[in-house]
Length: 391
Figure 1 (spheres, one colour):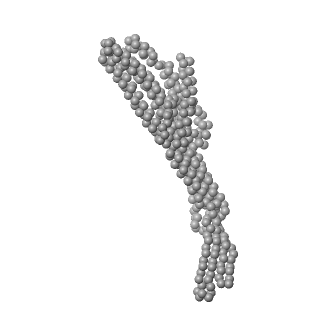
Figure 2 (spheres, rainbow, N blue to C red):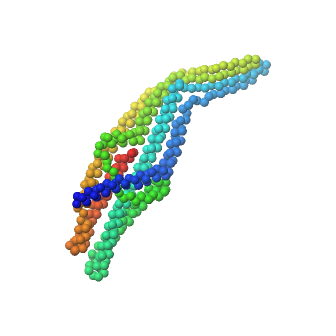
Figure 3 (cartoon, helix red, strand yellow):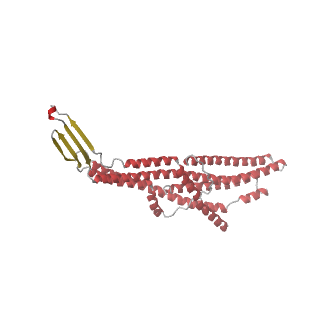
């Protein structure tokens, strides 16, 4: 018996590893065909172009004046000027850095949306694996129930059993058949959901192994990697960097602004031309700008600290839950394999040692245990998927 359990466990673990391949293939297909992601990608690209807009020198100003003299004997006057204004030089560097950070945030936001859609797709795959495994199991039960129903019909036809026993066998077969139909309907609905995520293109998914990969026991080491993969925390980190650059930009905007250019003036018999230089001294225009930038940075740092704490606690809860469920399911699976009575029940029924009602009752207890095991495996897979939401 120990050897059988060991072989059974090794087979299940091997299936757990190979089960990841079709799921990853489905996710890659959805990432390619999902229309929402395609729209977000275009919006992200447009946003990145917008972030690079308005960060360069202002437009040069060109002015031309033609003035008629009165009286006409004094002649006419012609003025021409071209002028370029510019901020303190470091301001352009900070604006460019802020634009780059915004572009990084746009990509992080796209990554977040992408992972969210793939997370939803993976949950649908978990449902499908559960339904596929359940259909496989219930199909076996249906075949066994049909065989039993046919056998009791044959007995009833020759008078070896009564109507009550005959009806029990037929109802048992009917109940299992309708349960199988219900699961198949649920499976069809999940396949439709998967097709919707795949841009309306149907996906064939027949994987039925619902046991996830093992969850690493050491949480802190695992979390160090998980934290780096969180797009929310990455976005907030970039937001803090940007708030620092905005504070520096606000400080430079309190420095003088300059303008320089060329100007000429022509009147009858005279012409004046040369350079023009001006300076704008900020007094009240940017009042409180630096103060606001500092307060904004502190607020974002506080938000980041709270987000890290919330994320840590959430992952700790899921990790603890996954480890406990993993151990419980392993024990449940081992004990269930050791205490199976299906063959013994069939032999007892065939020999007349138990009634049909007793057979159905004992079998339903075993089937219920199998169903609960499948549900527990599905729940563990959902928890595992949530735990690796951003991996």
